[in-house]
Amino acid sequence: MTAALKKAKPYIEQRDGGYWVEGIRISLDSVVYAFLNGESPESITQNFPLSLEQVYGAITFYLANRELIDAYLKEGEKEFEKLQHFLREKNPLLYQKLKTVQIQKHSEA
Image (cartoon, rainbow, N blue to C red):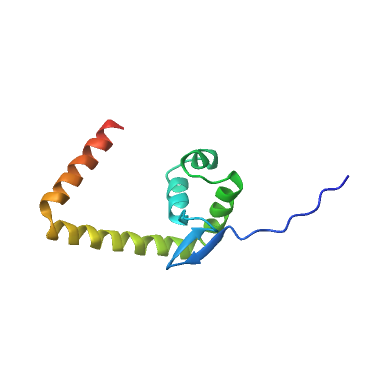
């Protein structure tokens, strides 16, 4: 008995200005940051509703396009910093409360 050869699937799609695991609402960013933080593909599947095949597909896409995706992630970090700055100026009390909770959360981990 011979198994039929499966063709490679597209695991990542580009939409709405970002990169996403194909057909679902999980960003490539989420998988890549987990991978870069040292999480194993098996661990990533426990934290996101993804199959092991999807995780490896996303990591493979990242590694094959590392320069492009690293630049994309850097741009996202810059946008996040701008948003933080805007929030800090617009509502300093709320920003301080969120920062305090973040610090407490990290000290418990």
